Length: 115
Picture 1 (cartoon, one colour):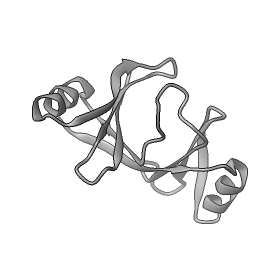
Picture 2: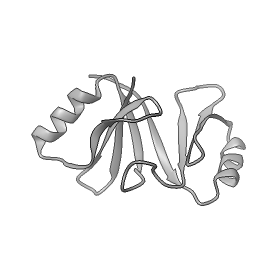
Picture 3: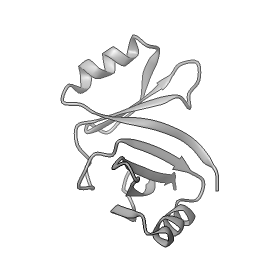
């Protein structure tokens, strides 16, 4: 399996202000679902930041997202290891297949693949 990109997920109650702040660092909006906004570097599009007011289908806002080429294989490896799966593997209506897992430090990681 391979990692395609890693993004910090920042909880925000001020989405527009946060978007504008990161715009000053060279990020531009590349996706906006209202509750989640992804910003990408204008010079390196895989350098991204995600802003979230909440998570539409999960019980918590993740701390980071990791896009992988095979989310099912990563999910199986995490389950086999006994890792704490916080949100089950599922297909989301916005075009990703994902699950959340808690790392040994308590960080919640959103692991996803695009469909």
